[in-house]
Length: 255
Image 1: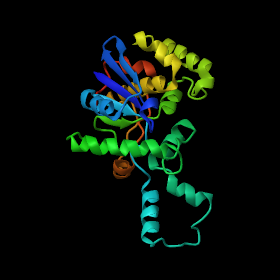
Image 2 (image 1 turned 180 degrees about the vertical axis):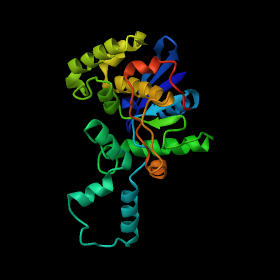
Image 3 (image 1 turned 45 degrees about the vertical axis):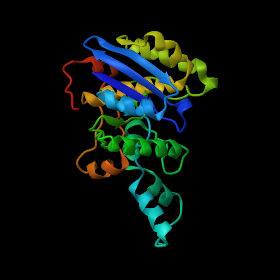
């Protein structure tokens, strides 16, 4: 199996892609690119068995409905159409709420944060994939699955915050050390130095590991009640088995 992880940013310079080749003995980081353009991203999705992308695949349905109503001048002004609770009801996706419950912290909201810039890029990538005949399923059952590295790291008992940015190089190095200790079967090879140099690289690796979890049935998926919403808003795959289970050949592959 070949899985890939994409740490998507609005610009190419901060976008990273990691490829992990899986055998019965473990995973080998086969390639790592920091500064990936759209051509490389589209190629990645076309070649890998499963691709984890760290970016929302859609926007909250209530938020989109709100914008459309406002744009058309048809917004109904209810008595409770104000306040923090009302705003929060618009900006969180169903999967954001579920992920918050699972890990104790909410993901960034695509409706009211700077990640909307990269989500626009992601939407364009999804459109191009569809044009090329690729199956795009925001629930995660296709090749592409939405991931959240912080959630994966926390579920696997690894440091999940405080390692991002040039000022946190020591924490980044400690994360890499702990990942190698927890997963001795994961071989970073010549790319270990890059993983210790930028958080974009390690997030891409974690995204590729999470793609593996999703591929072998060891990550959350939307239940019947959430399936229709997830098909529009997207769904974050959060690992639900230990990191070591990624090389358990008795796992059931679902792709």
